[in-house]
Length: 209
Image 1 (spheres, rainbow, N blue to C red):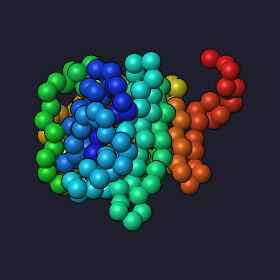
Image 2 (cartoon, rainbow, N blue to C red):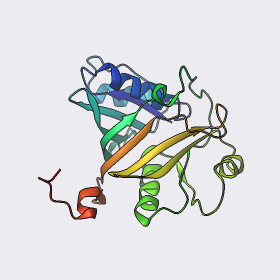
Image 3 (cartoon, helix red, strand yellow):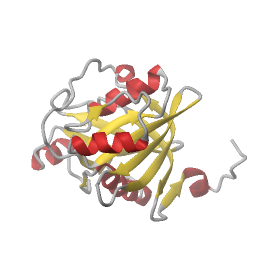
Image 4 (cartoon, one colour):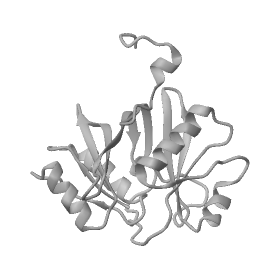
């Protein structure tokens, strides 16, 4: 699905976040960045057969931004960016030492029930960034969606007091609780001009807290 790495000199928390993502994106790999350039990473991703490269950028010790890059020898390029309020790691949600999913299966993105249009649009964007598939929730249960698309993993877009959140379910681990990581998104920007900013949505000026 994708190659996951970080900016140079990541913190322990950022590395843990990368490993958590490896455990919820099917058939993906977390790679220690080291001194590798973007070109090195793209070649690594291409050689492994991945269509996406995800780079986690750090600020003040915490993951700040997720950068998604399309992997293609003829048409590679930056796709979009998620700017984060914060994250909650799997171990902080009560799940430790989950095994990565080393098999091909769909990554399905849906929403919580009774969310707004912003959440639905972001669900479509997140599916595009991750090369997953967006499925409208309606009144369907998460288990029903997972069974219908023959997958063990769902990314679920949820409400959050300061933006939008993404949570992850692994039905081979728990059929009731999300395993995480929980990602709080405050801004998303796509290279084609689409964007969303929770402060702009709420009419909050940038210098206000």
